[in-house]
Image (cartoon, rainbow, N blue to C red):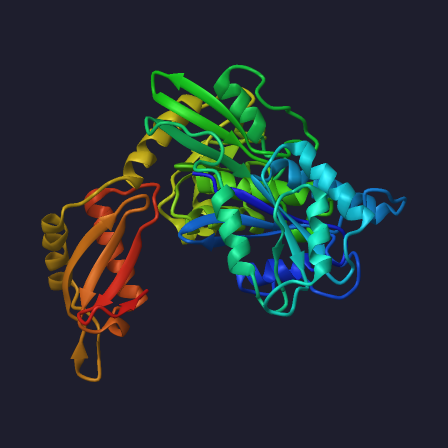
Length: 444
């Protein structure tokens, strides 16, 4: 399920980045008492009262300006406003109500989306000064007084945001649909693949990197099942993300991964593996998604022999060693080569990601593993694994109850994981381990 988006907007130098950092609990945005410091949209996950959302910090909005940078900042803020589920309009008590505040409020009202009006720099606790009440003139309802620097009033602000967040963000598909995020660098053929699978032009296909700005859904039903393919903008290295609008595309791609059941990680057969491919795949791995690595443009590889695929597979296995569970498929989005196999593989890895192993069967395997390879010891104390259970799926997550969590070394966890995979498959899905000592102290 996609997380709702909450954008913090306002004119320059009202404290948007300070508030953003306060709400997410870390100094992610640059904070400086100079207008225009935040030029790029910055985003981070935020949680309040058990509900998660993405918080987006934007540059200050100057509705009427000839300055090139300020025009770009307005443009990227407008993108955030258009895509946000809730917008926080931040104003400044010390400056009072300004004409720019009115213009920004008018921009927000035209969207028809929920708005929370917030008056910053109310550093004194208690009744607000008389100047506070002039902000009612914006026509946005009751303003909330806060101090972003000190944290006063941020709880009331988050309560107001919480009340306005949608129950479900984005399209809500039934469980019979497998949601597939197609991710990868720009220009590897993601849109071409989705178009070929859908049998029609669902996304603009171009060899210009960065054509796809947002995540778009294509619903496909065939003999293999029901699917929702989410075509995303290509994820570039941060140093390469120069255009403001593209920064938001990276957020949309990450959120598409969050929504998905399966991630098809596309790489270019002619370019081979790059460091950026590992970062893209790493995000899907960290989120516990079932993964397939699709090597596209296989038809365009010249001078192929009967050994070319085997050699490239071996190279890719070394490069993707951190997710050795992910299967490889050599395809061509242009010709449709092996796309039927792709559908089969998507269904398979989704099933693997959802596998549940009974506690009895799991502990029979555990007894075999510990008898075959003795658990590690340190200073006369040997690791004892009392039992294991699987509390959740997507990805399969196993809890091991032990006498000493520090003795359950990574290498032994990997051994247990390999034995589980050998016995039950679990192809295409990561596995999570949680180690608990008998006194219920948690260690990961």
